[in-house]
Length: 197
Image (cartoon, rainbow, N blue to C red; front, top):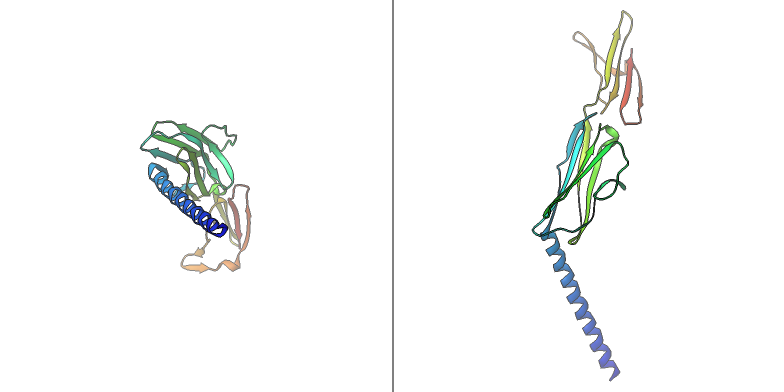
């Protein structure tokens, strides 16, 4: 008699677990269909520009947001309710019953600011996240050159990404190994290059 009850109990436990799993899976599908989270497409910017990243959450019914934030890696840059203390970013939250927007503006972007940014959300529909990428390009602070009878030199300050310098005189193209080159990088990820023959 004991064996029969143990088998019956095991079967009913499996059935209950199976139904709970099916209900959990179906509710996950329903949540994803009721909530739409979108961020901007990948963004390319020049050094010194401001970059605005928007994250929109919409639903066919009212959304109750518990947490809404923009992150870079593990660092929170901007949240719906919290203050942000980074002077390089501006944060704005716009409330609507069925559409809410969290906007992160990166001020004066530099190469160190490029990378993945993620928008994270927790609401009455569950958690969601979406990411976008920021690429920094075309950076040049200053450049110059000096040429005399025996020497030629040039310099580029605040460069990103690093390019290739070609030396030529008329139709004659000189090779780079014949020149001295110095390079250093600043705290914002920009390069300082100096070439001399």
